[in-house]
Amino acid sequence: MKITEIFTPFDTPTVTYVERGEHKFEARLRDAYDIPKMVLSLSGPSKSGKTVLVKKVVPEENIITISGASLSTADDLWIKALRWMDVPSTTAKSTEQASSKSLSGSVNSGVSFLAKAEVTAGGELAKSTGSSEVSTYEYVSMEDVAREIAGSDYVVFIDDFHYIRPELRSDVGRQIKAAAEAGIRIFTASVPHRSDDVVRSNPELRGRVVALDLPYWSEHELSQIAEKGFAELKVSLGDGIYRRLAAEAFGSPQLMQSICLSLCQVLGYRSPLTELMTLNDLPDGAFNDAMLATSSFADFSKLVSALHIGAKTRGTERKIHSFSDATKGDVYRAVLLAITLEPASLSLPYDEILSRVKGICIGDAPVGSSINSSLEQMVAIGEDISPGTNPIAWDGDRLDITDPYFLFYLRNSDKLSLLAR
Image (cartoon, rainbow, N blue to C red; front, side):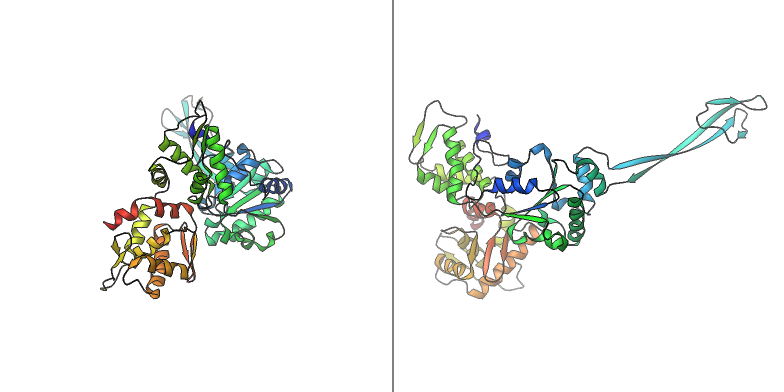
């Protein structure tokens, strides 16, 4: 096998698939799949393996995946489903008009459009002419999809349900209820803090929705991805290396796959070895090189640059601080550097951020009100750069990073170093 078949960041893993046994997610998903007319709502952090779990239980050829962000109207749900099934969603109706002209120029009415020519009463040869007009009619509805797949093993999987525009959710919720009643299997996926969006879209769905919540992966679970993959390569790494790799994946199995793939490339492994090799420690620089290479899988350069610049000021010079990494910058750089410190975390309370900022400053540090204001502005900047997919959230008490790749990029790319210049 090639390493790209062993470590698969963007495909369903085979060798490196880890069944999170203690949670029994596969069994719970199968049980929900078997209940007729039931809606399954999956929730979990970004890149936590929701789609992979669905593909492990439902044959991939039976999954009709539709992104919530792609819906402009509630009917788009069924238009896209029919398109996936290669069933036409429009019909054309033709209207025809005909006339006949004699060769001498006189017109005889009532001649069939299909007649190519005829002899007039006066003995002249007459020739028919005609025109047609085609009109296209949309006939898509939930009933059309139900006629195709109701009661079958096919699943309409609405991924990123939380990206559906607020004004559409009620209509989509009503469509989902009607579809479930008609026997169409419906799965949805969303992030944890929006896990109840399906029921909120239509309260009548309450009692019909099975909720399955997937938490972030533990470092032990992530380590198993590395252990399985490197065992297939006939490479044995020390337990400390596995834990170190898992710590940088921040609960994301997809990110762990990317990290392991990059490490293989840095170490020069492209396929399994002929004999077992044991590495109790990595060569100098290999870990950092692998982390830097992995950061290219998630390019947040535009967002980080905008956050580093911060909000526009109105004639007021920002105070510049000196930092422990021998760079200088304002409060925005101070906050970004604070986020990257050990122990890395996707959720930081205000007091922890304040303490970290003070710790990295040499001399005066930004005051609390300045840090709070900068965090509010950073969320606004993030929403402007990445509307609907902003990876940072701040409620005045806690900073949450909703995309593990963003934290990884901050810590392991060279972007902050380049910006300091």
